[in-house]
Amino acid sequence: MSTPTTPPAPSRRTHRVDQLILAVARNVGIPVLAMAVFLGLWSLAARNIQVSFGSLPGPAAVATEFNNLWQEHRAEDAKEKAFYVRQAERKTAYLASHPAGEWKERKYAGRPTFFKQIVTSLETVFTGFFIASLIAVPLGIVCGLSKSLNLAFNPFIQLFKPVSPLAWLPIVMILVSALYNPPEPMFEKAFLSSALTVALCSLWPTLINTAVGVASIDQDYLNVARVLRLGWFAKVWKIVLPASLPHIFTGLRLSLSVGWMVLIAAEMLAQNPGLGKFVWDMFQNGSSQTLAQIMVAVFAIGLIGFALDRAMLSLQRAVSFGATTR
Amino acid sequence: MPPLTPVIELRDAARGFGAGAARSEVLSGLNLDLHEGEFLAIVGFSGSGKTTLINLLAGLLAPDHGTLKLDGRPMPEAGPDRALVFQNYSLLPWLTVYGNIALAVDRVFPQWTAAQRRAHVERYIAMVNLTPARDKRPRQLSGGMRQRVAVARALAMEPRVLLLDEPLGALDALTRATLQDEISRIWQENKKTVVLITNDPDEAILLADRVIPLSPGPRATFGPAFAIDIPRPRDRLALNHDAHFKRMRKDILDWLMSSSGRKSAHTAGRTLRLPALVPENLDHVTWVDRAFPRRRSASTTSTPTP
Image (cartoon, rainbow over all chains, first blue to last red):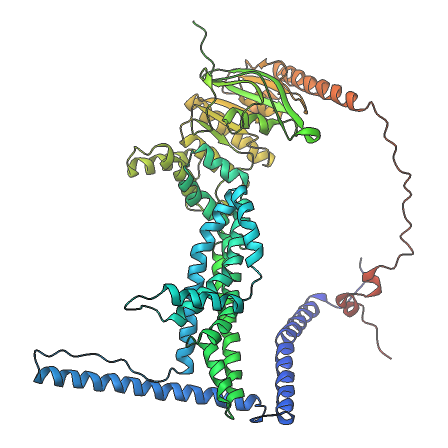
């Protein structure tokens, strides 16, 4: 057609740029706007709601409280360092005057700060998650390989999967007290109970996903194993495990997020010095800062959970043999 | 010359799947003598039980009745002496080209030193011209390259019998021709016993010493064997004009068509009543995308606002 029209190329390009700007504005603008609305409503609520110990803290109060907790951590950290420096000085002085004497090292007995409690929580959740994986992955593999074992385990999986951590915890605590009494304990009982509760509640997604992944392996891969006459362990190690890694990691990712959720409840009740205990202690405190401190903890819990999930997601992508890069 | 024991021997073998009403007899009445060094091609339509047949020959499946023997003894469980090139390659996606072949070589030749095994793997990668792609994973390879890896993996096991299950079925015509020539060359170098399963009579005649058609399933069975006495090396271009080749292709196709005609004549015995369908008039239907025009179409056909 020879109908004269306006030159399309530049207008089309500007059109495309316009659309790009629009897309960016939408993808960034809407979340920012939503956050602003959230903060506004929160401040409004904070001004109007009175609780037993003062008013509901607003965003600014929570930010201040976060800063307070950080300063407290810095101060406590400095104190601890100073304590160990003093102890080292005393030790050299003591050993200089008593060459045959025996020096007993002391641990700093200060209160754990909020940030130390975050570290404790992470240690606990990873211990539990590790125990869960150690049970769930091998069990999932044998369940996936054998229909009979799968049928045998299925009722237990269905029965125990929906049980709340709050129901498991007393049982675990009683069992830990009864069974874990070494003369020199390596772990605190509270830590062990929390970690085991996390393990009990978080092993199900990994177990189920591993079993499904193994059961759905391409028959061709198993035929390769048969033609090569691989033994049972070689078959599992070289064919079954790598072939079901994407499924296993999907399960692990779900397990870790379940574990992180369970952990806070477990720590609250077991008094493991982590974020759960922090929330509980602040609640019992009932000071004017209580709510602000708990809110700081809520945001910390959310952010850490999000970061853990992202980390697991990238691991999950790394084991999918480039399925997404195709 | 005394009659040699065939490498693989099938006597009145049958195989089906399922039980009760869902039972389907896939193969029945199979008789076959596969001789040492022979290149046998089995031609059949898709769905005629070709893959079941090759699984029988590999020992991945056992026949329901009849006998199946390897070197005169009952067929043992599948093993590397009957290397199988699967229809869909079945390369392990988490291993590289080298890794896939090395997995087989390490397993089949555990008595060799690591250096010997490595050299062996490299030799077979070179044989199928994949040395530049040695460290790539299957997903990074084209279909033809994946197929060559699968062939190299099978050959590297140095099997007694090489079983090819429609190895070139999923490839484009050009790659298929190249790989046919490659398989032909490799066979002439090694003189292995080969069974090729294919749906392409031309491919069967081009490559094999003997072609056996397989009737369509259920109860698929072998037709008469066609000995292919065209001298090697065979030139695919010249073959297309070769009267002998054309006649053989026609015979094989005729047999396949007549056997499938028998089946369809058999199934056409009952009358099917089809429901009376009238196409719906869609002009008066309100489509969702018409009711809610897309943003883009709205912006391109912008109407001037008064």
